[in-house]
Length: 612
Image 1: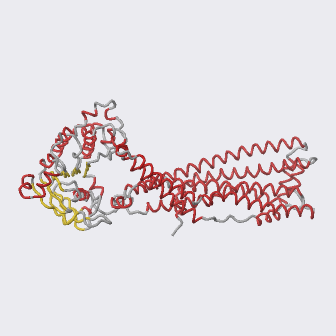
Image 2: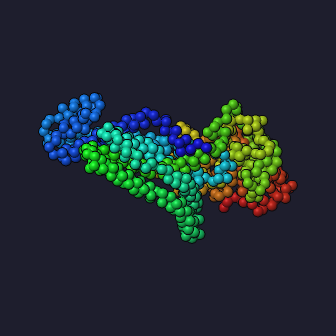
Image 3: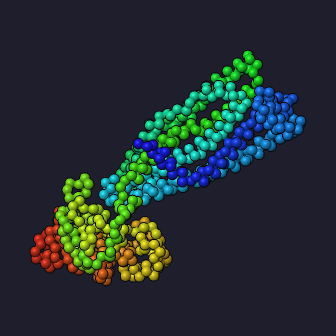
């Protein structure tokens, strides 16, 4: 299996231009770092040399007889630029150090700025890809795996991935360039002593990489559970408070919170030891090099100035490379996040999703009939089929009510119509066209669904009515709201149609929220309208208005109603009675009262009279 982190890092290749500019900035920073470090060493040597000018020191270091002809020419030229005045030479070198420091930091800023820009944009792209995949997952997958862990991947998993990207683009590039330039200068000064020092430096080892990666993955999974607990608690906050269950929810969260803590603690030792171990190993290496160099200086007459320069440059290189001690840890944490990211992106999608199935025709607007032919459906992992061998023919423009006890398969049957699920057996036809043989988008554009739970969003009333339809003129929005009897309460609000709704439409009554959902369905101009217990939890006035809306919009539409209200059933052209996933009987209200014992029982036990 390919490494998920480096597979994900391919996205960075989409940013060649800003990364090239960032690399240029890093090179400027590294070159100025080396020049500044050389200037500092020159100042130190100048102060220790007392009677030697900077020009003399440059000639000794760069234009000695053991140097190449090119290096000698460069050293003599540079020394000739300086006046034979120690104080003036000293101040000149200080000015050069200040200048290269400023220039280097400008390059460093450019590098960091562009790297952060690239990393944040890449993280944004990954979040967009994940939410696109999440929104296009089949309903079966969402029911099996839930949404909390997937939400956690979108929110949390891009953070360690971003840190790892920044580590390889920012720390590694900038620090390696600085360290490389310092080592290059040391090699120019004395390659033998520099190679000796490099041989003594221990290699950077991969420390406990698998442990970090596994613990990071488990910690991310625990964060997914944390999102699930928070989602449950806050979405049902009224129930929590009424049932005095704050302590219960606090303990549920505490268990998950401790789980995140335990996983984080499993990698604390590796994180904490990384930098101290590098420091200790580095100090041992320096001690070994200094000991050898001291022997060369004191016993063999080696030039102490070169020794100071080499040690100074290598110390600068070590200081530059020290931040890379935790690079492997950050990459392993990013690897765990990248693995979870690709787990989500590898999930299947609906035909209208990320991978659109080409070659299928669009479904013409429904005008004749809808037919279920021996349809059977079972949820994965379920005990048996929820819909069993259902066959029914429905004419265009009819209102069909579906009734039955809880668990009889009413909602599941109608969920097959917009292909939220696909039947394991049988087929569904609209105007003779098999739904699996047409594009999913053309099918769903003809369908509107209003459920028992009013699906409103934190947006303006106008945006909620126009949900799913961009660039709709305001007059069409208002016309749809008037058709659903929303205009009367919307215009009474201070900001009218620009009134911002709270979460789940807080601030409106249940009937008002439901009428807004009806208005959204009307604006969609569907050929098929599905009302899933849309009037079961509203007052009598709202129910009467919604029923009036239904009578107005039934022309040129086929309407399905899952009803708990007797008044809604009475208004239907046909009533289908379901039990155990099967169609038990069908007919009008009067017909079913005469021939169906189950329907008679439902009218007394389940179908409610009009709300008072």
